[in-house]
Image (cartoon, rainbow, N blue to C red; front, side, top):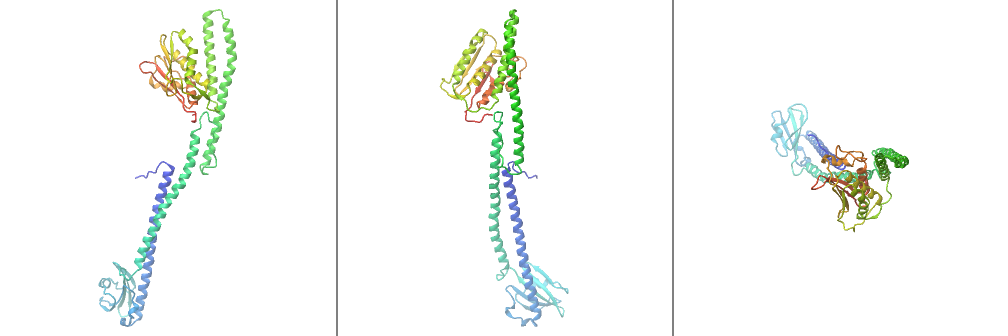
Amino acid sequence: MKLRLPRSLLGQFVALHIVTALIATITLSLGVAMLLHSTADHYQRRLLRQQAAIVASASPLVALPGDALTDGMAVAIIDRGRTVLMEKGPARPRIIAAVPMDHGAHFFRRGVIEAYSLPIAGGRWIVASQDGAAPEVITDDIVSAFLKRFALLVLPIAALVPLIGALLTRRLTRRMQAVSATAAAIGPRTLDTRLPRGILPSEVEPLAAATNEALDRLEEGFRTQTAFAADIAHELRTPLAVIRLRADAVTDVAARGALIASVDRAARVIAQLLALADLERPMEDHGEPLQLATLAEAVVAQRAPGIIAGGRKIALEDLSTGSMIQHGYAGAITLALENLVDNAVRHTRTGTTISVRVNLDGSVSVLDDGEGIPVEHLTRLKERFWRADGSRSEGSGIGLSIVDRVARAHYGVLDISPRAGTSGLEFRMTLGPSDRQAP
């Protein structure tokens, strides 16, 4: 089964610290236990060997002093038939039955009794044994007590290691989150923002440096593109003005009208390009206090004569009661409203009504009775120079992208949705609070 680590860096560090602490605790505990038992066995075997040597030097066994045997100890002398010739201490028939009958000295164990057999002259063996479970024997008790206390000492340390690791990792991830928040705030209008240096680990610092260098190149390219569009638009304004003057001198009324309409359309595209280039530049403040209802009223009043002359109607609905004050750029919002109204004019039949509505939530909507477009194309209407096949093929293709950019420059959004009860569309521009970061 494959081990799955958490996706977060903090979770991975904590999980690895916990696993490492557990492995270290278990390994250390087992190692200490083995070392203690090995040391205890070493001293016990040395004691048995010494006891057998004392017995071998004491002839006969009855001459062995009474205090020569330590607690839990027993000694015996047996012959080849395992007959006990002499014995001091507790009788241990199981040990006697297990004595190896050869010419070598041996350590052996039966249960909790450790024994040592030493061959001596005359075909006899000295058998020294000690009961590790005897109350008088404290070696195992010391080992057990030490292991318990050792566990009480190691377990808190093992629990503390992941905690310290988590705290240190949390401190690291907080710095990384701060840098990530800075990176997330970088957008077309904040390309001069750079990731902070010197607060990330040395392994991650090159990534921040490379990101800043990429942002430098991106900012330079973005500024070059914006300046190019503005320069081209400015260069085209003068020739168009000359063409407009000469078009007025054309005697053919139909040709003059078509030529002037084309020139005016080109002039409007250039004006929109200039506005779009201006919107891409960073804004130094949050604008000025304004009322959407007042701006909407001005746009409706300015566009109404042409709309009525074209056989359509336009209506203004102020649901906000005109009391809502917002902050923004009046010129940019006016341009956005003009583009929305002009877009509705291009895509509605004569005899229909265009509605401009200021909503209670601080948004403004333009509703038309056009033929509409498929729902899957709605999100693409805000793309520059994109036109749906069929009904919405007129215009420069950048009007709605300008509206979308104006909305985002004011921390808001442009929503396009089918109009309830008709085949037309509703274009709603919502302006957000001015204390937020523009995308």
